[in-house]
Length: 162
Figure 1 (cartoon, rainbow, N blue to C red):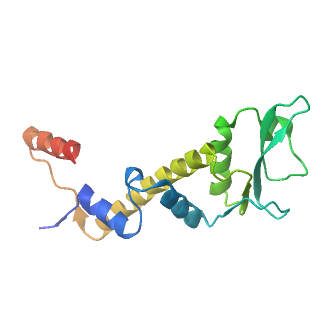
Figure 2 (tube, one colour):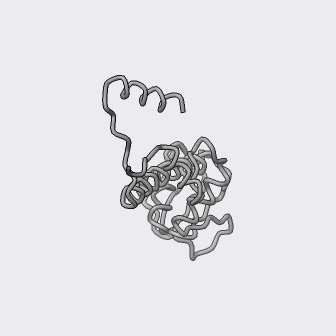
Figure 3 (tube, rainbow, N blue to C red):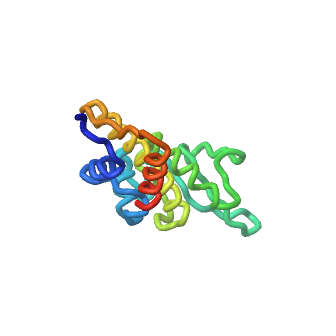
């Protein structure tokens, strides 16, 4: 008989590697895992050697805008300036994936930072889950065969209950 592959076995193997489901790990641990995975660090200390910058500026008439750029000396208004901070998580996530380290953030506690980290963590977790499943299959594990509709219904209920 072959070895049985289960969702629990995959999740246990992931947990042994330090990767927990997004609902089981706090924001600070997600940040640590993501930054380690991409070999990126955040800093709130401005310097000219950062790989990426996200900061606020004020317009002449007193509005606050956000700038997200690789080159502080060459900011493109139409591409690097944001009127709302709601899209900054996309820019930050891209900078992390591109390993533009260190990343200067004038506010490391901003909501968009948490959104970017969670988005990336979920993505990496899903990739790791697929990798672990493939590795276990390479080791001879197989998903159980479903013999009948009743077995299928029981399997679906087991998944829904877990």
